Image (cartoon, rainbow over all chains, first blue to last red; front, side, top):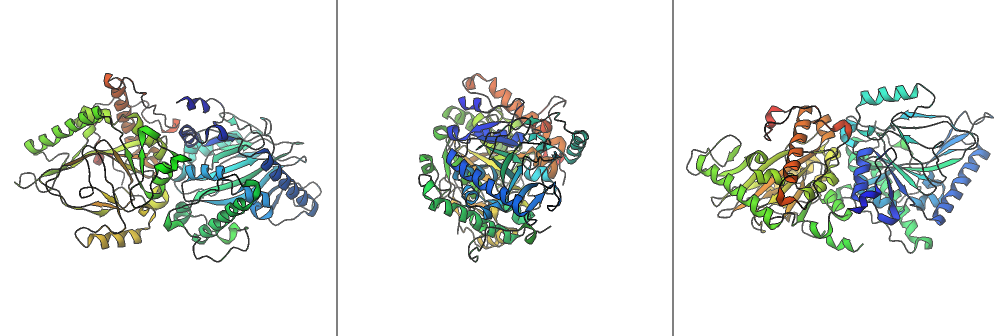
Length: 313
Length: 313
């Protein structure tokens, strides 16, 4: 079991050097226990450059056209100090990000952690520009279930943050390991205590990342980030959920499952057909038969699937 | 990925040759998808012989003393045609079975599939004697949750059947792959149709086992077995659940979690102290800190933990 050395359980995020060891049982267990895992070196330098260029184009366009739809700003976008911080549905907006969504190593990790019926839910570009970004307060992510710790405490709803820029310890996400198993009372008390001052990292570990790395976090894991000025950091976020959870518990409708499976299959096909990825084995998406909801659906006309058209709650 | 050849997805139960390959990602995915996995050759011949002898002693004692407590009979035990078919709390009744409950390979599989906070729940010896046993009707196991497919469809509540005798195809459990994802309506309709005749295996696969193999099944997977006469077959069943599910959703109380963790730790310690297992690396049980419920509990006086004293529902 020399692979045990790969997993660091001290005061830092556990990590997996994916191209050297693959995802080992030890990595799976550390992710399930701690609610966070840094996957090092997922993107090749070529793919990273493509996605960086796509990210830059999306952000430049936001600055020049100041759109409201699908964009989040620090202030109303017509105000002179407003800065964009987030763009939704980026799989539809940039081909390199759609190709990234079909990445076979990323999808094999999701198959192991979320299960064979995983579906993509959110796809966003989140960024800090040189204009600065406010503190990200300590929080659990949205879309929690009743009895959330029982349903997803082990980490079946996962946010994968694909870093396009380095995140050093003064400009990175911090997480509290194992907070994914905390009950609501402990979580709320801790978040309130930490958020009472401008930036308190008691009990937390920094997720220091390099460009091309991926940070996986269980959406129940308490996390936050300090305010920064004058530093750029761009992250593509893909969230994944098990179709059987979406089907029985939401937050999206049943229709959403089949549509997002079509999106995933399209991204896998686009990547398989692209000669730059000709030496890769494409991901083989095989959910259980009763959860193959793409069958008999009309062909997709877009990869943009607005959440608000499919809410169940 | 030459390991893919290990997994057979045709009309038979997927299998894992545990001492040759370990539990591969492909095995995890097949178990999660199909709801069943045959783990071949878990027990060494020496350990198998010990557990067989313990099983024989328990069954012989049942026949000679005809007890009611902790024993299930085909008829009232004082009736001449009555035969015993099941004995509960066998970890407490036979040292080789307690040692088996500390088996490091078995527990590492459970850590991967159930998660790091797995706890043992049921421990039973289920058997068919030469006196025969009735059909086991098609069913899901007990202790299901509301929204069961969302909560445990991927297989976080697992029954591990450790075979002490071979189960050939005329005397084995049959399962319907992927039925772990079926909704209640489809499940009930199918079970009623199959149970309408004496023995119908439409859509099912036989779980043919050798002594020393372990059959893992998701408790949501539809399964059954034909009536047999004149054939012996003994299986030790250990069920496992995630502590975070037990804690939020039951069926046992919160106290039960800590007590069963004490039982598990005792079994691991007994095995580690036994010179026959001196060359094994003991299992390192490390649930998340908030789910280490054995801390500060009084010392155990027994390994027998009756379910009815800890029901929450």
